[in-house]
Length: 257
Image 1 (cartoon, rainbow, N blue to C red):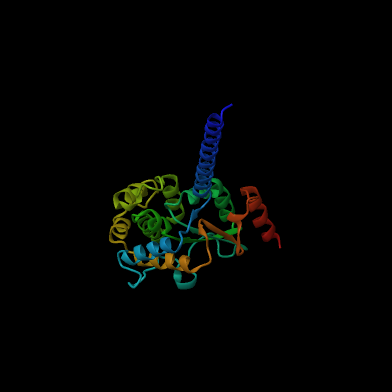
Image 2 (image 1 turned 90 degrees about the horizontal axis):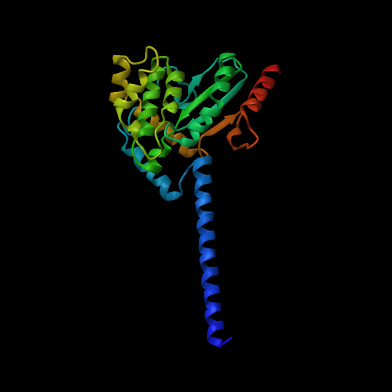
């Protein structure tokens, strides 16, 4: 074989090896993106957090405005929407964003178990609303949906409307919840919610500043993203062995002590 042929084959092998390396790197990046998107709505780096803060400051009412908490909200600064009996021995704290796909996934899997435990008086849930996706993806659907949920809390219909929002969640890149009309339309799926009072609350952004304040509390916390689900201070969402059945056993055990 001539030196020229050997050199040509060696060069071809090198090009093939380089192409395979590039393809492997691209595959790894693609897999990482898929895993990241499906597992958690993650906080951005410093620049991303800056966008969240900037958007929060532009919200109607602004963080500096008077934050009007919804009826029955409690906890520090009145930022918690409580569901369930106060006497329940187990407390589940859920930081969530109505635009977050991972939050919807959590709700779809755990919804019936959480309802069963709260209805039985064994579990109380503290819902804390976040606008993370507005900052990461643009738009204002997270804030507007959170305000509408707070308006539903005023009407005593938060749990039902909460579930309707997740069952009708648009794609993460679709800011459909940014339209008041869509939020009011969905209220029609909850008995007694679509009233003039609810519509005014949604259209006026009555609880916008409260939502901003709630999101600021999330930003100050040591959280990696949404959903963050704490049972007795432990992030059960980060527990890969967690299942609805395991959550039920943990809550029922706590109620026996």
